[in-house]
Length: 196
Image 1 (cartoon, rainbow, N blue to C red):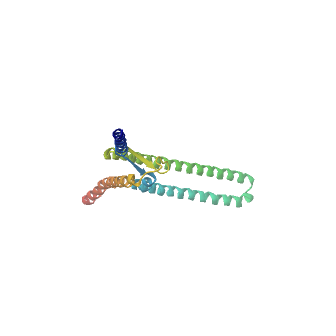
Image 2 (image 1 turned 45 degrees about the vertical axis):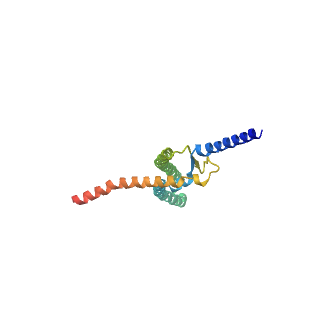
Image 3 (image 1 turned 135 degrees about the vertical axis):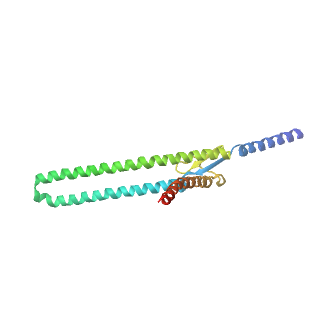
């Protein structure tokens, strides 16, 4: 009886040890802090910077036109009584038309900005996902989870966080691509300077 209990206890112990090894050794997982990835990826930061510059340029252009419209509207109010009702009605229609055109121009500029930079951002994100997928295959991961705004991981040990690794690789790749795209332009300048 004692032998059968001892064998049963040993069998349960071996079975539970084997189960733990399968659970911990069977799957390789990691996670990426997607908010940090988006904030610190150099290519995305460069794109956002370019978008802000272009947006600021457009805003200055619109502000100049809006300021002129405000001045003309103030001038209209001063002149409306002295120039008569018919003149005031025509001038009011003109000012309203300019205001509508300015609104349309603003919407067009915003759409243009969104189209240009939204497509580029989507392309960069698609490249990031492709890189993460390739990284996962290369490193033998079964799963790589994302945390952040749309978190799919509620808890993970920090040892599984591969965000820094992915960021380093993406930024090195981006800088490498930037160096190779700048070289032909520099070589062209050198060739032009030598030819003169």
